[in-house]
Length: 432
Picture (cartoon, rainbow, N blue to C red):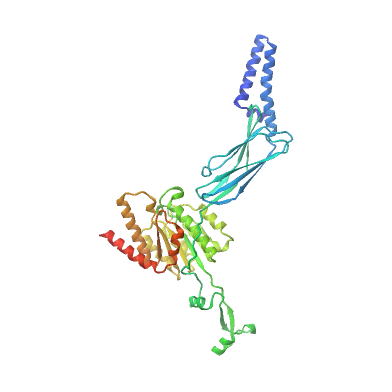
């Protein structure tokens, strides 16, 4: 009852004020009929407060999201199920689910009445154009009586999490360089001639199973040789995402960094589906060995939360990749880099790694004057040339470029020579 009195609306408090005024007037004028009116005006909000206060603890709520993980720009359906656990019917219920700003305005739904032990479900959709993890809820239920004299709010503590992952674009199948990685002096020849399930031989040791004797090798060497099963060859790839704040331009979903994140997600999913043992490295602390997780969910969840970092430098990326450098294919998605930073990236070409770099000209994400545009293009061309000279395969990316159209360039071994000549001419022309 006390909580119900606290929830009296302006109308309910006006009724009580009118009741007090009518009672005072009845005492002064000696009018019994006016006193009856005062009693009626006072009883109505009190009954409403008792009615609403009794039912506020008799509600149960359940929320479900379908699906819990959506790509940028997609929608998720939120279903709210509210059940009246008491024997008394409720009054009008106003449901309001709290949402972060990125998911839009708070939905409000009105339920006229819930009977005894009756349940009702309502649904709404949310859509996010920005990556991240968002809390949906808690649900706030406002209960009122039919006359609108009392209103109480109850917040259910339960929340659900919606994960908005980057947009994943299907990529065409191409044969990439550096597909196989492993140990040994003749791994390329072994894979090319014998395949991935090749069996090598070694000298016979006491206790070896005689069924493993390799008679052809024994006849050739003159010593007893047995088969030794080699570890299967595997395709390895490392996707490097540049998170330097000063390397990217633009704001919101159309920023150059968002293009790079979406490209990293698309490339990572594509390589995993192609059978690569994949590793994702960013400068902001994310280092995911995707070969140790099932499916792409965890990988995409990490990319959903990655952010630009003011403290990250090119040296940070190089050090993180080289901590577990095991050859294979390295695909980098870089924002604008200087010539000196491009030279630092040459350190990733150790251990026989093949490096492919998607170099974003982030200045194209801005509207620049003609002179500033020319200077930005000159700097971008010089950095790309420095990467080419260090052995990288470079793919230039401008605003509006589509990854599926650029992806086949990662497999073209000769494209670097033509690009090197074109960039050299560009740089030379800019220096004149």
